[in-house]
Each structure stands twice: as C-alpha cells, then as structure tokens.
Image (spheres, rainbow, N blue to C red):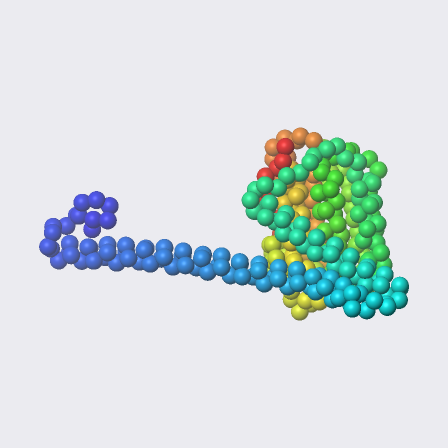
Length: 309
C-alpha cells in the first residue's frame, strides 16, 4: 500500500494492484463521508433557520394583529363609549409591550451568539431588587391561585452585578415558574450567602416538572417545551437561554433541575467580588452533590457569552 508514502509492493504485481484499489476505495469513502457530513450540517442549519423564521413569524404576528385589530375598531367606530375606548387602548398597549419584549429578546440572542453581550457591573443591594421582582409577578400568580414565597437572608453582602440584567433574569425565572405551576401550587424564591465570596439564588416551583429530554430542550434558544402537557403555554423559548448567558456574563454559574410531576428548580450563583479561579465550580459541585435526587433531571447550561469587565 502507498497511502503514507512509497508503495511497499512492486508495481504491476497482483498484491500491488490490490492495495492500490483498497487505497482508492478508502479515499473515495472518506471524500463521500466528508461531503455527506457537510450536507447534513447544511440541512440542519437550514432547518434551524426555517424554524426560527416560523417561530418568530407567529410570535410577532400575534401582537401585531391585536394592535391592528383594536386600532381599526377604534378608528371605524367613533362613537365607542369611553370605557370601551380605554379598554381597547389598554389591549393595544399590552400588545405593543409584548412586541417590544420579543424584539429585545431577539436582539439579546443575537448579541449572545456574536459574543457581544455586555453588562454594567456595579455594587448592588440584593433585597430591594428581589422584592421588586416578586411584587411584579404576585398579581398574576394570585390570579392563577399560585402562592409566591420569598426568603431573603438578612446577612447578604452586596454583589457586583448589573441591576437591569439581574432583574431580567429573575423575572424570566419567576414568570416561567408561575406560568407552569397549577392552581394551589407554590413558587419559592431563596437568596442566601453560601461560603465565602458568592450569593446563591434559586426559584423553585411545585409545577409539572420536566423529563431530561424536555429539560435539555428548554435550555436551547426557541426550545420551549411543547409537549401535550404544556402546549397551552405560549412563548418564544428565549427567556431561559438568555438568563443563562446573562449569569455567565456576571462570572456566575446556572443549573436547572426538574422532576416530573414534582416541580423545577432554577439555581445560580453570582460572585460578590473576585474569587479564586475554579472556586465557583468547587462550591457549586458540593451543593449539587448534597441536594441530588435519583429521579431528578439535571441540566448544566453553558452558552457562549464572555464575562464583561
């Protein structure tokens, strides 16, 4: 054979011709495999692009239709009662706010994928921000018959974080927890200082939970779980992946655990300042080992967002 240099066999010999045929067959097979791999990757990229366009077309069209519909009614019916006019104006405002949120999420995902996500880190008092987030979702939770409990430790040190981005993360997690928790269920928020140099946040619900497959899907952009159990809940599936990237940009770590028919726990840690490299992984692994459950699905998320300085 002469795949790696001069042929071992005499030219024109039977074994030499046979080895040359084998070499050519192997080369052709490698070329065909490379072409097939490139084709599959192109098809997957095309499919992802098509799914993105289809998902966004639906999500953007829904609030736009509401804005157009209610504004047309107000324009064509000049004699509407004031109460009905106010109601339509409220619907238009809510649809516009939802549309703005969708656009902001798309822009955030674009920044994440481009490695351009930045955060404005500053020393932050945790308690007022957390109370504001909980207050924001309490009304919706009460309407669904879900209770929200907030446990904030008294001895929390200030953390170095972007208040707007941290609030975005907490609202994403709280909104998801409330959305997927049934009547008479509970959502619990815990914020504690664990060890030295970081603060741990967790949002735990008593909702329907997820399987390992559903958990992995939920952590991917546009990967909102749409099984028969959850298909009534709409959304782009962007909130959780964005939250993961934002926590990573703070130098923190995010994990998600869920048990089917028992609930889900989203947990992340943020340093209070500069800590030794590898320390976050060490303390986080200890916490995970202590709380592990054999039937619990687990996802450790890791999106490509660089820490901001």
